[in-house]
Length: 337
Image (cartoon, rainbow, N blue to C red; front, side, top):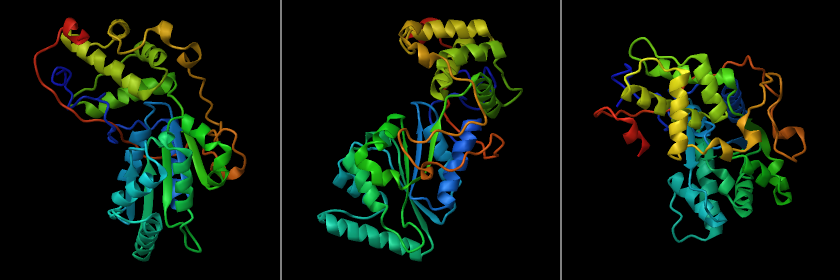
């Protein structure tokens, strides 16, 4: 659509989780450091939480892309499962057949698989996305699986990724034993105003074929105020701004354009009207680089999170989306549909 007009090789603000577009903000660098620490230390459980659209899946894709060939990865994304269904899903994802077997036989087969992987010198990692949907029974089933271990290390590492209510669920009294096995916990915070501007222009540079476009600071501040620093909402606004700019043949992406885009997105219901956005969530607290990442609420004990890293940590970059489209220029009325 607008790629040729703006000299872009692809849409820089598509919503798919592409590690090539990951902006290494402070929180994303820290989260990657925590994940790598957990894997290298062969932690039992690693917990990563964040608001909807905060970049959790992109972060995971970046982590998994960097793993060596000696790691076997299973990934569960459909988590509306009862305990036995979860066990069967895990086996299927690791290439095992759970058909017609009793639970004791399922556990025996999975245990033997993990032992065989360890004998072959391979680590086994289970990543569960949308983990906030798991029932307490399913989470307890995972805790039981984490008991599979040798004298020196776990046979199965488990990464739980979910929305903030996952932390509340893990704080339930029934999951005390699971909490004690959580070695690393990190919560992805929204981007602040500076990071929002850097994030937007980072993605434009990654997609540029020639001299990159750039949103000026007053425009990115407006986007930050409306998105609350949530990357997915930032992407929605910026993609619409490029569509509108293309339709009006505007080479400059300024604050006036962004204001018009926000009005249009609210009118069409893509974004809720400001009056419907709760006050406390509109603003993002000022960044404090020296603050520790939060541990699980109501969870006691130093084992819940690793020691805080400083904002000077240096992890990788990369993250988010590929998609091309061509066709006639849209008009604003077409954008409303």
